Image (cartoon, rainbow, N blue to C red):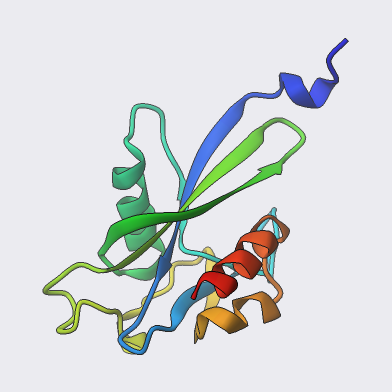
Amino acid sequence: MENSSSMKPFSLSVKIVVKDSQGRCLLLRRSRGSKANGGRWDFPGGKVDAGESFDVALAREVLEETGLKVVAERVVGCAESETPSKKIAYLILEGCVEPGQAESGRAHPEEVRLSSEHEAFVWVEPGKIQELDLCPQFRKFARDFSNQE
């Protein structure tokens, strides 16, 4: 007999590693009042709505969370987590700020405008991402990503 966790529906969430002109990655600290992982560091992005393509969802979520318009360039990883009611599959991409938004095509710290979902942001070298108090589902990805760079 299957256990109850295998009966849960999946939802898709998309995340992006946005790099600045110096190759540092943007991470966001979730508001302490968040129902999941409050106060922990996360990558920009979020849920894909029904009928929405993942690239459109990613662009929408990142704009809402940071004020940045991004372009996804490649898939760099995946992750998963589970809540009492569902499983969440994460597709993680790497990208840059939309050309024209920033001269270099890379984000600048002063361009980030956080939504109420997050309380802080940081630009960090890829090899140092894993030193932050990341959401648990992204810790393995951070280790693997650091080794790729």
